[in-house]
Image 1 (cartoon, rainbow, N blue to C red):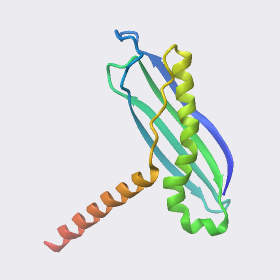
Image 2: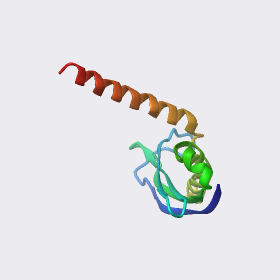
Image 3: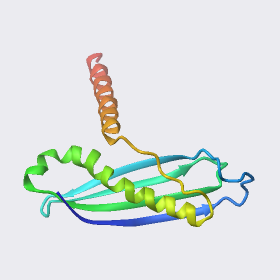
Length: 144
């Protein structure tokens, strides 16, 4: 695997002018999402990782997305699913975290560091939920 490029694709930051607190000791919830595409001819995987602040009474709101292009070897194609769900997002997360931390710092707040994400656990949870859906669909078919 080779990293071809990593870019900041989208960035939005706004101070909540209605916020009455000091902005120093705040609990910010953020949502992190990711997806990937694969170009079979060139063996390039493009992975997108985004984060958005969640909540109403925050001193600021943000939304950011980074994208990375990764060139994979022929023998890595068979392991594409774990690469796209675990490895590539894990590579991109520090870039996304740094951008958001720098935005908050430049706005006069303590740097907000996105939480660490265990992408292995995220993938395992998604597999469990998918298995439940498949089982539920199959059991519904049995009753017909």
